[in-house]
Amino acid sequence: MSRIAEIEPVDQDAAVDLVTVQQRVYSELRTDILLGRIAPGEPLTIRGLAERLGVSAMPIREALRRLAAERAVELLGNRRIRIPVMSPERFDDLLAARIALETEAASRALGYVDDALIAKLVEYNDEVDEGVRIRDYDRWLAGNFAFHRTLYSAQPDSVFVPLIESLWLQIGPFLRQALVYIGPEFTVDRHAEALDAVRARNRMALRIAIEADLRDGITHIGNELMRFNAAAAAKDSKPRKRG
Amino acid sequence: MSRIAEIEPVDQDAAVDLVTVQQRVYSELRTDILLGRIAPGEPLTIRGLAERLGVSAMPIREALRRLAAERAVELLGNRRIRIPVMSPERFDDLLAARIALETEAASRALGYVDDALIAKLVEYNDEVDEGVRIRDYDRWLAGNFAFHRTLYSAQPDSVFVPLIESLWLQIGPFLRQALVYIGPEFTVDRHAEALDAVRARNRMALRIAIEADLRDGITHIGNELMRFNAAAAAKDSKPRKRG
DNA sequence: TGTCTTAATATGTGATCACATTATAGCAGT
DNA sequence: ACTGCTATAATGTGATCACATATTAAGACA
Image 1 (cartoon, rainbow over the protein chains, first blue to last red):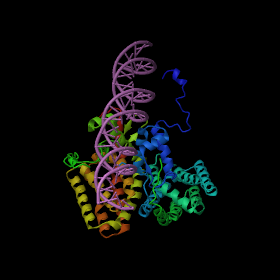
Image 2 (image 1 turned 60 degrees about the horizontal axis):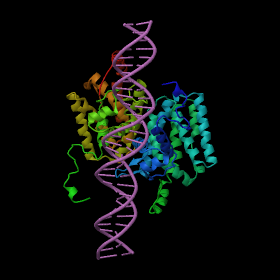
Image 3 (image 1 turned 180 degrees about the horizontal axis):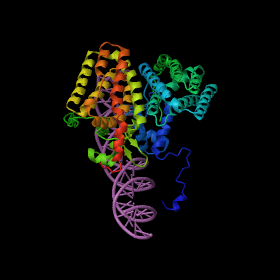
Image 4 (image 1 turned 120 degrees about the horizontal axis):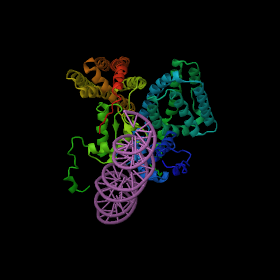
């Protein structure tokens, strides 16, 4: 590397400066899906996304390939890509998988938590409450996921976290829809109990709190699926569009 | 579609005729990793694989991107790709994740099993035994995975199966190494107990059998990790090569 | 007005090329 | 022999183009 090149600041003007374009695209699409900014069943196209994000097709292709492997998007095979649709059976499966993985991940992460991490958990929990207060769905969802991810990620290089995040990506778009449908003030969580269990380093109590958090918080939302889908089916005949 | 095109058999001469080149490449690499034909830590290159499989770089790139999302390969970031290496902590994590997911998946699939599926399970179990008898590692590994996958896949469109297979891909290369190291005749499984539980439609017994199968069969192998890695570390100073 | 056929458009896939950056081999200096 | 520098080779990333095929729009016929 020459001395002249040091003058150039390697073009890190953007706020998020990930090393490759594809990582930025992936990160962006991933957040959109996780927070449900893209609706279930919504079609995506490589060229459309490329134009919208101002990049060529290559980074989009590789980002979508990765998201497809995580089941965040669906490659239909007839040259069509979309966000997967939710069904009662799939929702039940996703909840069961979340409980199985997240209770175990929490239990195994417990040995690594310190006061600094607990402080972050409290912070994210406050974000969730704030999201409910001002009806900010993005903040509610992001805070919720951050709370859980921070806990599980206490264990370094966990194999659980990528699997769990794949489940979140699958449930995110529907969760957002359901959340808007029922309103955030009717949500419930067991974060306080989980925090107590974490502080007491009580493994069993933590498992119970996590399972209760998912079951109460999610099934409550998920039970609205049938009537929600019924309502959606009524207007399903009308076509939709989005770049 | 014109009538003339019907004469052309759409070029399905190959035994495995998946619709896209990338699917064939993915399937091929995936099998190689799952059965441990590629060793942990082994480097891969796009151009090398492209030449070896007789295709261009594009299908390789997309297949590797997908495999990376499944944690079957590792993108180091310094323009280097490799099969992930195993560590005692990661092995312990993988086993715990397998138990958490596979016991639940088995339990949930139990309601869908019929006699035809049980017959297939018996068949795959025979494959495992045959693999032990003639010391065929590929057959042993493939039979084992087929046994479990067939059981879990009894439930249609399971969200568990892709997650579980990601874990298999992560454990495959090491499992093969360990298997060669200790010899297949020292392996144990609890497939018979699992089959009994399946036939009796006994959920709890099935969960216990699956957990025992994984714990006894895998930890026994995994406990050899330390001395195996110690032996490998001795010759690690010598450089390796492979296309 | 509805349905089948046909033309036009759009889309994912694959191939090839250019490029920045990294690793590796070669080589001098001590 | 060993270390540090240099030049060469190799690698992943991104861009652009061609192509087969699926979808959609248009139109003809009844």
